Image (tube, rainbow over all chains, first blue to last red):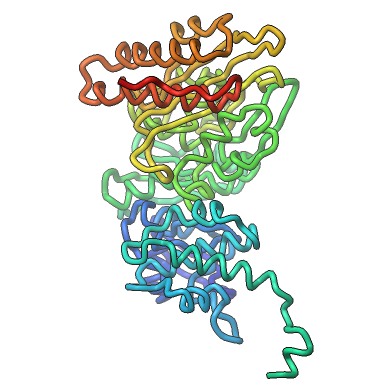
Length: 166
Length: 295
């Protein structure tokens, strides 16, 4: 069937199998392999993408079900000016080890910060409860999300005195 | 993954037209979080899939003349955040908040939880305690309303016809003098399938300090969630005190023994339900926190 998909800000006209899952179309037809397939049943969250600002397991929805909606994958996180703040905080806090869970973690965290720019520690843990990591033990991941939230709270441009000192 | 045909109705009229094509091998898809997983694992092969997710007029929560009406496509994330649900059916909001992960709650729907007929469906336990009714629409456009318990005929099986889609769940909104809660036990604290669940709704007379009109539902004990009349009678007229909590918890053990005699999980569940009963009791906030005397 014909399907119009908006992925990472780009419109795609695709010919998809009616029963193709979103993850299949993203990985196999659009080459967005940052979307990882772990458990295929909604336990691990490695396939998490953002659909209309909400975190979704892309292995549990059909591509056809997101027709007309905006899909954001980890490939779309970085802007023209470089990595997203969340991505930089993940690196800075050592929240990445093997890296397989990282795209899903980032997208769950991103969806949380879209809905609630300054979440509590409990809200962060709840938002990430559907993402499994077998390496880090989560502490550094939660710290990275916390740091991204804290930094976003600061003024977008540095105070004049500091800027002139650079 | 099979190559079924997929219909994507964009409204109720298109839905009834689509339903006319349904056969016993067809499946209705709402959020899809359970169906798509099992389809991917080749557990079943449909000839036709009807995606309900585009029928946006089935996504609502309304309070009408004391009745709360919830559209079948309302997601768990919407239920847990909805002000009307939190005020008038708190057990349903609490149950929805404990389904799966954030990713699943953003997609999975109340109607899907019912149609899926899993014995451990969290919101079904809450809806049983609320005395919910379920409205459906058929391929001929006819609408039917049934008590929720009459939908289920066993684990994963319902009375719904192949061309019948759930459109609405309704129940009497709880008043300010009624307390309600949902509690469950799983293998981890979040993102877990219930091994046991319980929903409680009870009228509390503040001046007398007594309980009445209790409704107690147990889930994941047997094939579908059920109310237990003996548990409800026990609470009638009881004071909200530690002794009542103890008697209630002990009666929950008896209820589990009656429900699943000889089942392999009985030795675990008959004890675990005591902790669950205390969790639910304490969440009602009627008296000082009570603790079970284990041993």
